[in-house]
Length: 143
Image (cartoon, rainbow, N blue to C red; front, side, top):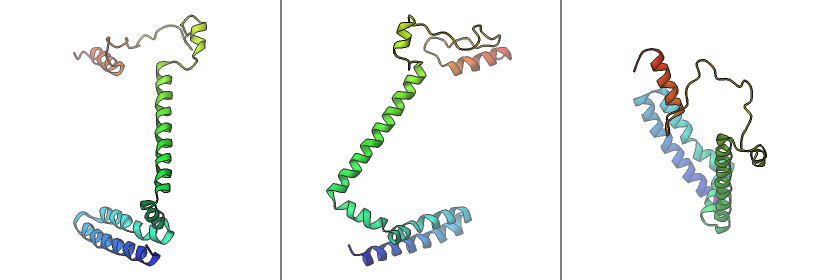
């Protein structure tokens, strides 16, 4: 596709979007109309900066599709590693061999006793937040 054709299509889409945004402005107010106008200007900006050419080339280039697939794989792997790391942090593991060397027990950090108003652990299979809410309700005489 030529640059002129891309620019003409983008200009047409932008003008159509601005007309629709004007109608939205009249019906729903300035905030919604301005948001529509902002989104309507995106195709024209993309054509003027050359981003549209990238997407036109992307549609017909297997090498660029492979690049998008590799980028997608990188995002999936990054998200999976974040989930694995948060799961490990939530379970208290992270030291790996240090727990085995200490006999499976970890020393508590800070004070060793329970607070007076500490919430009892959740019922088996229960939610710790629900246990806290139940304790607050019991303290206020609500069952």
